[in-house]
Length: 269
Image (cartoon, rainbow, N blue to C red):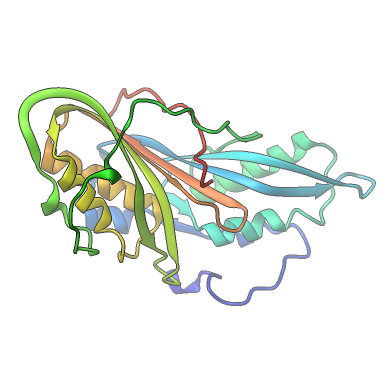
């Protein structure tokens, strides 16, 4: 089914509104491969999309432009393939709507139908993230020679004492499973538990470099591997992928009852 996606091949520019352009992909198969029981997810979370190129016509044919934030719950049975989302949003360009609220209602209905769960839509984008005390592990002076497949064996503990810390890396890279094109992201890991070895974590994240998997699946794999190998009491994993086709995605997965992360964008977004 994945090869039916209109990605990596020439696709006609949509000339009219067409919700049929949305291509949902079941999450179940990838979750089975990772060892996630879809009936009892070990995490909460969402996939937050930022749309930079949204436009439509008013009732007199005058164009309107906007940005939007779309939020798909991790409990949705389907993720929405990014190229299809871009094509769908482009299909609004030549369509007339009575108001911006009508556009938002249309987006909510179409995206919720494709995802199989309620999707939140709001006009506008979150601000750029404010720097904080997160530890940047990319500055570690270490040698790395493992670029895939993702190797959870790199993950280890650095002592038994329970701590709370936030680590981040700008070096997460994976590849599109259809075209092989690179996907770039920063990743932020908040946890409470035995101290995670930073060098091992960096080697693990870099081992995604030649791996082909959708963004959402990569984040779920990181979450599950950290839970299994490092046994944190609480864990939050958020990746902020760079923009492609007027869209960027920010998947977030966390242990239940974890507060929502403050929405934000990186400089590379």
